[in-house]
Length: 461
Image (cartoon, rainbow, N blue to C red):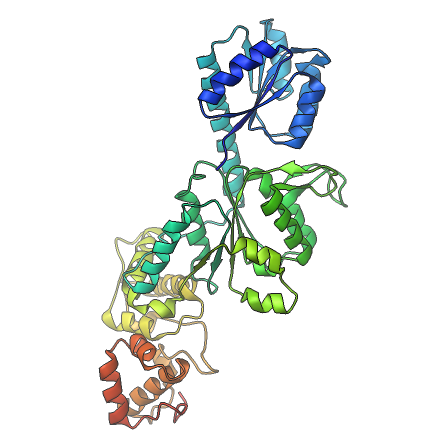
């Protein structure tokens, strides 16, 4: 992450030199201006994190400059230095948007402390705005589990923290892409700054542009006031764009400019704004296919996929089901004010037999519903209600799936094994993992039951 930038505005070059040397020694990047005009031009070309502004300048004063600065950099803290310690002057400056009003001469150590405080206040304000736009996520552990798939993801994610490049997260709906994105932000060098997220799915181009880039007053019908976009709110922090594969092509072009030039324009504006953000994108789509269909820009794909993280689906890590289910149940018990919640071995086995098209999100919903049905806090198979069907048939995990009561237990077992093998396209090792048995045992069962792995199920469920 780049250094915080401080703009020094003073017409005395010697004072600017002294303050610049001191702040540079405190690891700040310094911009300079010697007039009101130069200050505005610098703010338009860049985006300082804070402004130290002398009251008297050659072409005006701080009170006349403040309204213009508020238009150009509305959320940047401004510290005014003056030789005139007048209460009325300070009150007027505060009303116009100044954050601090200091009397010259000011000690450099005190100035440094006040700048730090102003930047921290700015971070807190942006975090509040970011939190209001973020959908709360109950399941926070991105790498819960003991299986090789999740261990590999954890290893790659930790390596990704060493770079500021964009990150692309691929995974099925409900697999935990948002949870991983928050982990990446919280463990990055930008963790003290804001993280904003936006789901691109279902948003029109106009709405997506307005949310991301903001707009000026009068930019379109209903734009009665200027609005900051999420990119500005996340300055120095992270922007997480979920389902980026659904973004409009025109928006994709603008995102490419943000990544390459670190600049953008609000809707209805004619000037570029500088922004320093780290982009994390996620999708459940195959972006290569979307590129072939001319629905996704190849240049944007190559820029966001330098670091590619693929989240395994829940059915690819069924060995982690006990840990994941237990963690979710602990949170559900707290919400329902239960002392604790448990599940029987049969209920856990039912969870491991299901294919989980909705992944962890679906698992959480199933467990929440089961917790409401289990009055004694013990979840049994009869409490589990699965939403989706497989190949037009009810879920294999539900007791009601085996609707034909004329079938024997052996028949039902054979049908179920055939179905799992068919879903795994004949891959015995994967089928054995889903069934929770060693591969050698599954081969013995196939031979004993006379199952032909090259054919589909011999009977309907």
